[in-house]
Image (cartoon, rainbow, N blue to C red; front, side):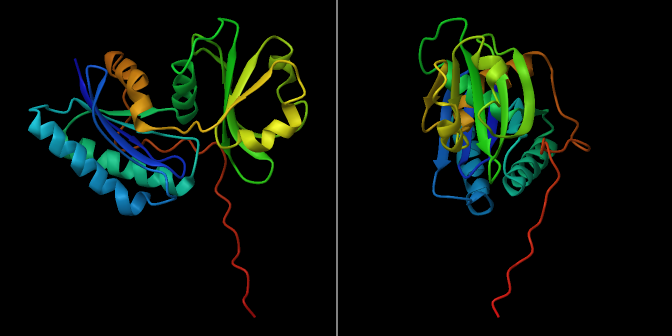
Length: 230
């Protein structure tokens, strides 16, 4: 039985959850935008205080490692690294797209031939995406993808695909005509939904290197030049 602090900051939602033996003990979430730098430390403290109140000693820190927002991922991993180092506990990295896939898998009953395609908005017509089967086996590894009508043909032609995440809105007009395309709204990567993945990683001793681990950006950061006001 492990007590794990889960941290998720890959999108505009900031969330932290304390879990013990797979059960959520405490959680904090904010959906109002990119407030990670302001809120994350306080959310972590709230969950740490709850762990102390329940006499729980943390066994690991888990953090979403991307893909997603460059700034959010850096903030989350930095906080997680510092905490893991200070407490002398292992650090677990959890793929953000897998978190989203697990969220949908656990939300309803699906036939075993269903595939899951999480999407995180990467601006313009690009998304970060992956495709998983019902056993959470990777059919398409996490990748940046420029959307068009044929982006997912190899999967849609095989069977039903569930699309979700904040990138799926712009994919829907392109893909919804295919008979096997299905869409679920309001799916966010959240710390409470990291539980199964962080527990599995802890059991398998699948830990990150505190010194050298980096976020899974998938593509290089491209800064934009500020527009002149004159």
